[in-house]
Length: 72
Image 1 (tube, rainbow, N blue to C red):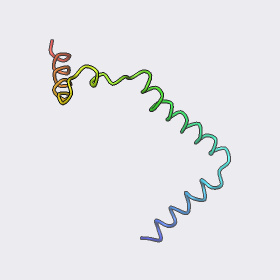
Image 2 (cartoon, rainbow, N blue to C red):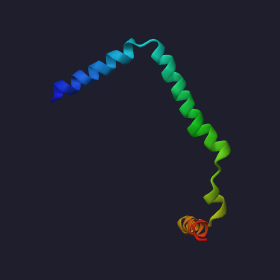
Image 3 (tube, rainbow, N blue to C red):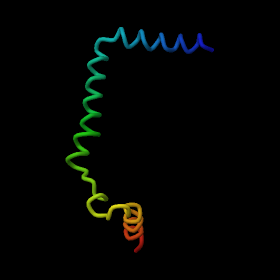
Image 4 (cartoon, one colour):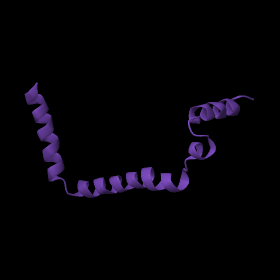
């Protein structure tokens, strides 16, 4: 079983070590993920619950908001 995992590890290790264009593509992917999850969240998704709910009652606030939005 250890031999199988070693072969899989060696396969991927050699593949990533040998790639040329792939490194640039991985860099683009990582920059894109950073932009999506860090920068966009900071500027476009403010912490709404923290600014509108009292401290310690955040779960109750979210529950009330869900009920109010779903109830006709």
